[in-house]
Length: 445
Image 1 (cartoon, helix red, strand yellow):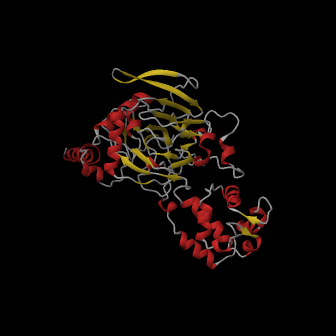
Image 2 (cartoon, helix red, strand yellow):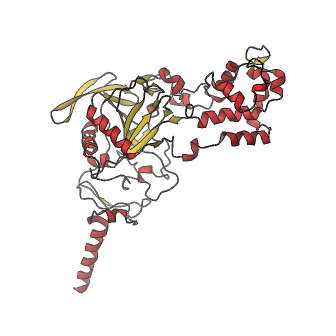
Image 3 (tube, one colour):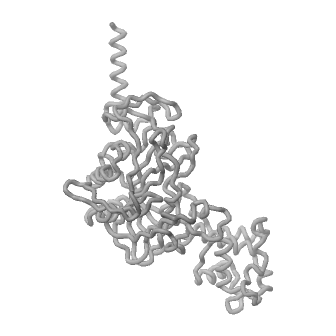
């Protein structure tokens, strides 16, 4: 009898610490259990480690769902808020993409911008490499000065004829730009060339802004190449992404407008509540003139299941895969000029994602500062409009996250005039091997 009482007491204590109290202290506590118990009927998980299989008790099997787009141009009306219907337009079938005008009210748009400003905006990074945009051009130039020797893959640049396109014996600014575009996929503006010449100390050797063959022979070619590389990788105007961002939580302790928005998203997507509340926090992004985000995928195409999804990376592994089933993007203001969202290959039947991603590609279709309106689908920013698309297919066997739809390649075109504000909700999902692991963002709303 005593043993039974002790066992009962231990069970109560286990339940209190690992499942029941719900206090902030218990949530902060670092424990081995990555899958706490839920108050909801959908899951009761008994997992102790993301790498282990586990037994589950479920009332209903949770599976992902993709809405039926019917065909490009199809329109329907859906009631997402009591008494209010929203138009839903199928803008593409590859990827499956919808536009919902007036999804947010003006007041909601302005409120989200206000919350982001209060939270504080920081520089956006493409990927997770914070050091990607860091660097010292002067230090690079000094290093190039100390050693003029070109690497094997740079030696081609010593050929004067590669630069002198019109064969007049001189290299002018337009020919430098032509070289940068063809050899570096760098689209320099006309005024950037004399700035480069001055910065690397070539101005005095030029005649009427042109470089002769004799001057070229005395030029440190490495400095030219490294300057171009720095410009492409680090310069706000040329690097893959130029914007500021803030993250806003959307759990039960969050702003009520953001919580209500999640309820609207659940009706829009028809996904289980557990999937909605496991999504990432809302990202709010602000773009100034020249702000952009070149072509990219929101979900990682890797099928290496040994690498955890980032939203399930409880142990903080250095490598993780972004597993975003759905993106919902909201336009929070009207942009004076530019700032469109471009889907590079939407519904394209002649060019494939593999064509764009080939190492032999001679143009940079991903560069939306230059090629925005070459994209198959370009959506102008309109305050209150939402666009929603599926980044992944569904695995038919498990009903969980399947392969990435590479036709979801997209990006933000340059803001030409004014500023642009958007917000993103990313709905994450597990794959068939990780459905027992809870999202690190999972919190009721």
